[in-house]
Image 1 (tube, rainbow, N blue to C red):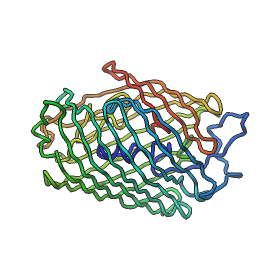
Image 2 (spheres, one colour; image 1 turned 90 degrees about the vertical axis):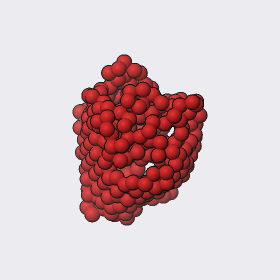
Image 3 (spheres, rainbow, N blue to C red; image 1 turned 60 degrees about the vertical axis):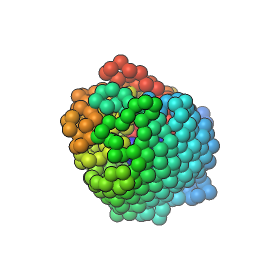
Image 4 (cartoon, one colour; image 1 turned 30 degrees about the vertical axis):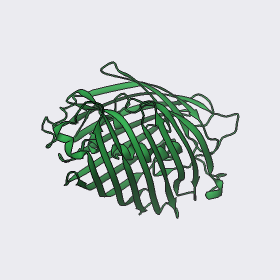
Length: 379
């Protein structure tokens, strides 16, 4: 599941997860294959795998970005990926900066660690961003600028090899302004300069054989957040999300992946922390459809063509729900059922870890085409 951070936090801190090509709590049991062989999707042997900090892989790469929300640009970053021991998740330390052609800028530094045979799992990201994007207000785009700093932290204790749970915390200072002669809608004029602090519970049930490129098993993740806003406005709200992933091995080089998500947030939530259809389904801008309730489902067929190259075909469907009275923030109607699909290419960028550079082309039910560059898998 893609992380549900506010826009500034997502833009800045998610750079590091993108650079690593892994979820913030990644598990890796991938065994390197001989140069002459394509990487078998079912290969999860750990017989000759090296563990520990010194056995990791350094990534220093420019990553093209093509986002329907923030435009076209580049991520420059460096990261180090390693697995502490056979049972622990993947760990990552990194730094990244990002810029696009619409003037958006962001930077982040952070780490995601899993230690002591997956008993202790934590992440800490700090980022800053100054981004420009279209906010759709009752179906019409309004160009706005949002800037701020964000801190995201999480700790989960591994109770069993599959079950972990713990606490999460996030802090965001955000400033929102309309660009040019436009004015912000009355429903969000009190969000021009706010501070958001959140404390939450997180739980995971993970049976995947490999979280960088899983071919069997599944992942269930539940997040519950209580949020307090202060500054230009003062209010509180609750937010919860649930994500379910599952993977089936159809052949030595073929995997079918499926994902379903649900999101529920109280009416008072600021628009940038509501349920965003574009955060889950490729083919839609991040703030094109959003609301206080959302359900999505998607599937992806993944095929390895050779040791380095692969391809995917994907389709997704989802709906956001909210009335014209979205709390006191009258911004959007129900999205109705929206769907999108497309094709993608994959290129393996690491010899030691199954990390892919991804290029996807998605077309939605409005005949809008969006192109995505990123690192890793969509889910």
